[in-house]
Length: 281
Image 1 (cartoon, helix red, strand yellow):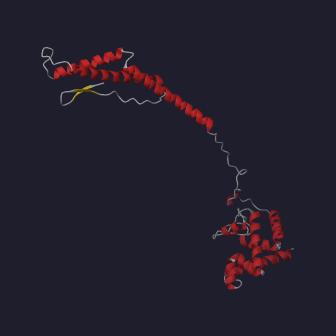
Image 2 (cartoon, rainbow, N blue to C red):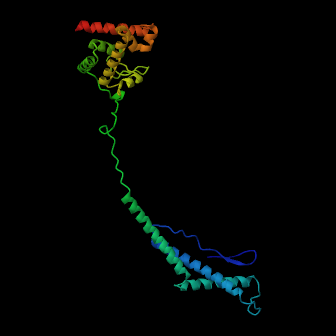
Image 3 (cartoon, rainbow, N blue to C red):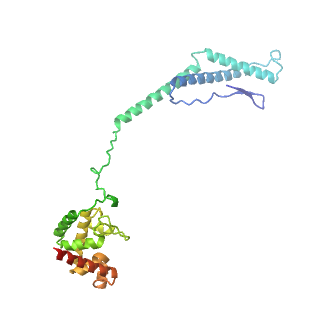
């Protein structure tokens, strides 16, 4: 505690330093700080009590020290030291009551925190996280272009055969479309975004349920299904191939093969490929 003088030549006693009541890693040090603060608070209280009592005594010229500032300072220092001595030697006074109350709050706070943690750990269920793997994932992981495996001639023949039976198509027709579209490369990708052996664009692949355009089996199955839809829609092989290349709306708008050199060449190449494979068999 400190003593200071204001402009009216009166002294005042500052309050003890703030002492937050909280848990730390050193409870014994906290208790010592609490005890010191309690003693300082009691000394401040006793000082003001002595000051109030002194005001009740009549002023005596014989007892004074001149009635000046020196007398006031001396009297205040005397009262302060007396209050500190009284507070320091009294173990059943105000300071002990304050100290016991603060220590109780400190210990209860520590116990309550521990109890709260134990209660939460008991009541709340423990979360268990399962790693996400290809085995327990809801949807299969699509292969990327770089993950597509090389396709052997035997594998390609078997996939085409299954698709031709499933959709009632000539396997030579499917082979010719694959050769014209991608050159037989399951990783082929056009600047327009068509991918895989039968060059399916994303919107068409989604409509056909193909979730991995670089998977040869899925790509050929989706392409064969779409070609069957075009054949059923137009009832003509040339128109169906033109619709596969340029879109069914374009064929309908022109009433046949559209006047696009790319589409016209595409139809001719596929039909030539069907003939060549048929002649070879």
